[in-house]
Amino acid sequence: MIPIRCRLLLATLLLTPLTVWATESPFPPLDDNAVLIVAGDIGLTNHDDEVHLDARMLATLPREQLTTHTSVTHGPQTFEGVLARELLDAVKAEGETVTALGLNDYLAEIPIENFYDYDVILADTMNGKPLSRRGKGPLWIVYPRDAHTELQDIRYDYRWVWQLYRLEVE
Ligand SMILES: Nc1nc2c(c(=O)[nH]1)N[C@H]1C(S)=C(S)[C@@H](COP(=O)(O)O)O[C@H]1N2
Ligand SMILES: [Mo]
Image (cartoon, rainbow, N blue to C red; front, side, top):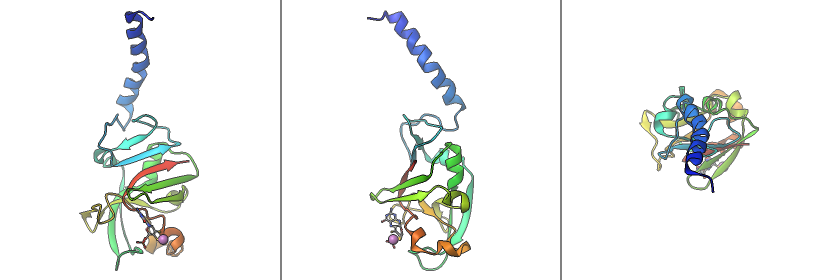
């Protein structure tokens, strides 16, 4: 049995680095209004070994606007959201593949270089309106399809995961 005073000291020693880390991280501990979870090979965590981002944390990342046709809408649509690679860099993601999971249990495995070769966004608005769950929100992976002919292909369309809630880096 460890005496209570030693246990308190032990707890203080164990918790101090966490506290210091928490004040420096752009992603403070979150319990839990997560809009998006990033897991796997990442160098920053705030919730066990994952990063849970709420809307406020997502809003601190660089955003981009992009207008493109999609495989599921008529005519071009204007999307806005966080640049996917900015999020991956912010959580120090390292790996080959990002598995993107949708709330409807859909998943797509995306080569990580897609996010560096193209300005892919995690769209949260379409034509200025927040994406609702019925309207493929709250987050939808959107490729700059009109700007690159090679993206106008079902080999990319299946990676446009809507109702996105989780990214796993491997
Ligand atoms: N969350 C979620 N995202 C998804 C899908 C899905 O079923 N659920 N289907 C994918 C596929 S296979 C394609 S081709 C595009 C367009 O899907 P749709 O033509 O079935 O609407 O969205 C992709 N994103
Ligand atoms: Mo598809």
